[in-house]
Image (cartoon, rainbow, N blue to C red):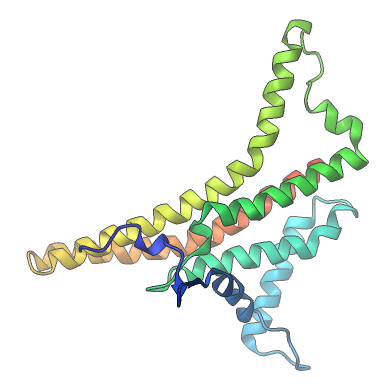
Length: 226
């Protein structure tokens, strides 16, 4: 119980060197490239899920937006697998680091905005000033819309960081309470252990949902600018 509550969020090191890059690259091992004529069940399920997700996510895009298909699928697979691996005991979740999430959100958001200004300049500029705005409100609305535009990548990163971090903290707290109650009240400890199991199942769902939400929002930003 003396363990620091936030120790699991500290970047791990080996011989004084951070190994977060190796941990970040590890999820790619979970999705091997098929090298056989007939795939096994695991790879078949993976391919089916990828095709289902890509078909649902890219159905709203035109031909120019569908060129981002590989990027969007790689993004959702990376975030989802990283979140799931972070639920293993004594593991590290890179998506709890705001710097990593900002490093994913800002380039993707900037890419969609640049595409919009390059190919749909008038439509992109029109977002800063809704039609029919009274003349005295024009300067204030332009400032508000500009701020809301630049807040989008921050909202993406903070949403992912907050949801994953909150789930890990709840599991840590309830797990510690279960261990402490084992010597006090067995019945109460069993109740908290049941809550811990249910919360862990919920966190599995949250890990996948947050990956889908992050990628879907990037997809919607791309749709607005293509």
